[in-house]
Amino acid sequence: MLLRKGNALILLVTISLTVLVFLTFFSSSSTSSSSPHSSSHLFDSPTWDLSSDESLSGGVHILPIDMGHPNDLGDQGEVTFTNDDDELKLNSPPPSSPQDSDSSPMSGSPDPRPLLSFPTHPPLRTRLEAFLRRPTLSYEQALEHNVKLCPLEIHDRQVNPDQLKGEREGWKTLTVEEIGRRRRSLVNGLSKVEEGGKQVVAGMEIEGGGAGAGGRGIVVAGGNQDTTARILTLLRILRSTRLNSTLPVQVFHFKGEITAENERDEIRLLGGELFEFEGEEKEAGVWKNFQIKALAILQSTFSEVLYLDSDNLPLQDPAVLFDSPLYTDGGRAVFWPDLNKDHPENAIFRVLGEECRHEEWQIDSGQMLIDKRGNQGLNLAALHIAAIMQQDYRFWFSLSGGDKDTFRYAFHILDIPFAASPTWLSSMGSLNPFENNRFCGHSMLQYSLPTLPPTPLKPLFIHANLLKHTASLPRGSVFSHIKSIRPSIKTTPEGKREGLDGARGWVYQGPGRGMCVDLEWVGGEEGESGKDGVETKEWEGAKEFEDLFWEMGGKVGGW
Image 1 (cartoon, rainbow, N blue to C red):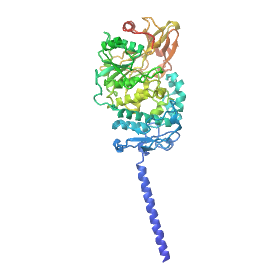
Image 2: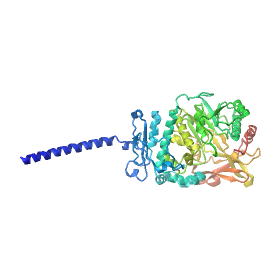
Image 3: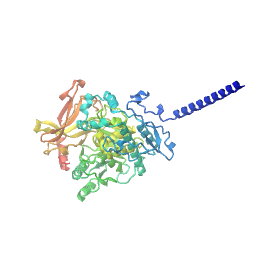
Image 4: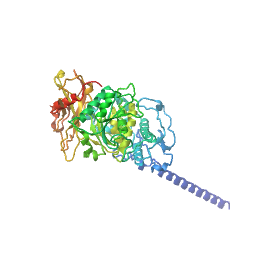
């Protein structure tokens, strides 16, 4: 009898243990299947293998988010990541870190809004979530990968050498934790813009009134004595019989600038409308207030904007740009190239969670073409992101070398397309008699965009970015020569010069001239090298344009 009772007890215990094990297994399986760490939610990259545990070790951090539908959070809508296990938590403040109190550009500053808050627009939110899920690589991992895509022997000479020298150490010391904070700060900043009552995604009509509301126009920013003089020269050239442009112009300035009534009256007479920046004051003690470009475009009432620097001199009516298929079919945003590329060591690739793009040049933001409604209204969100970067310029300008590439980076963050002008820039300048007639370039010569039917791509903008740093030149010797990569080097029928690995442009100090740009061709594509890869020629339109330049109040030197 006792034996039977003992067997029954053993059987009962065995059954209980079996049920307990089954329930434990079922519970853990259910939890695992719904975890945000599920591999189906990892960043999908065609290059980095993130499918194995090994690929996630050694500094690679994935920020996993499985938020589901944006409305699934109900009224909470705020999330944050911890830095130790990258686990998504609702309404949980991030752990404190010694770096949180460091205000240096690369080591970071306290996150002003520690909880992660998303804008309410569902497609925008989806793209921001994808941005946060991108891999965060260590410096060593990113460099090992990026130098395979962007060879050092090319990018070492196509990078801005001053940027590389001045920022390289900061790029190396940027931590993966700081990258996470910077990404979250952008998302929080965009949400804060929306909370302030502003549109972050454009509809068919842009908010605001004024001349040209919802239409096309030119936007310029400036306001000190020299930039005001350059703005007036720009407006006079636009309205001259040579260009006869009727595009409306909006001029943005800080409070207390452009106060002379004669200047204000002439700007209005030339079809310009004056706007004072809203909620923004000029920062004292800095070289330039670069952060005003994105704000000027955002606060403009135009839907379609051609932004021009005050030192930009159009050679023909720029209205034709708005009809270029490159613009209308390319995300309705076009950027023009600069002389340099991002270096594979640049921490920007780690911050963006992207790989180095060998064929992509930095942009010359002296002219930008953008429709706020482009890319289903997300171009407006990109402009807001660029403005947030420009406000936090001590960090972002260490990656972009100024404001210019914050616009390009913003489009990459949202993963939306933009178009690049197909023609690499030339350099406009003159020969320097104090240096054996060496070419001294003071302006970036940018070209027109493709049209239908196709026409030759001609010079369109003289972006005289160094002319204000040039010693006084006599009339007739300012815009005399153009130096460019020879058209014979792999030029497509559309005018695009392919295979620019041998192109190099750099700034030097010219005796009796000041800051100058020179171009050279290095390498052996199609057997060309050195002087065979570039050409310097007299500009046929020099006299006509230079006469116009001086008659419209142009000047050499000054700031």
